[in-house]
Image (cartoon, one colour):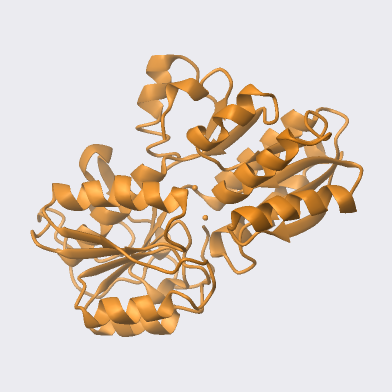
Length: 355
């Protein structure tokens, strides 16, 4: 989606970046039932004061989650007079989040908002936390649906996949060529869903000249992502483009390309923030990239958690709740709440954003 004009962009980034601007599709659960309890929702209720809401990102000190949690989730929790906290591992590994979930449960946390490093690895701990009384909201990257109450999805996997393939196709040009994907961790639910749908998108006739030759994983670590980008070019000398649907990966790949002989010859797109990608857009390393507003994602996740803990929603399809400045949202199938569509950043609009 492209938007031009300051007023239109500003409106849409609160309504499409807000709904739009970042690490999901799920693959289980009964369609249309979500994973909420059998309790009846009270759509006219208000969020209780004093709720303890903890954010558990894939990894702390990651700029993406610093924004989503501390500039989004915290703001929302303070608005409805709850108690906010953030905790989590320093590395994004599949099992690293389990001990934090157990601790939060023991602390009688009302809502655990978690971005899963693996859809299965933390399910046992989350189920125990639910049994102990916590409401579970996943955001950015989902677990199996039965392990949580609601999943706040930054955008549909299909929308992200279409956006990424269109951007790399436009950047590479009509002659096409070999492309590769630089992902986060091999077990990240959202990354894997996006990659599978990118492959489906690439099978369409309009992308017949693009050939996906490799997928590598930087584990959301800057140096490893840098090295993986370097390795792709060494392994595939005819590579024409790289897609990195992770904020850490796309910035690291841009840094490598910008200082190499491949600058301007190998195209790069992905999911990044304006502040981390601005210099690379201006120096010609990157033509365009996409994202949603991570602060809005965390903000929405906090309100979804508050609504769950207050009985306003149960996580079933059709439940409605108000999310502060973002307005009203409706829970969809499998307990999914979608923030919106990806937003495209490029030279013509990137200076209008500061995050």
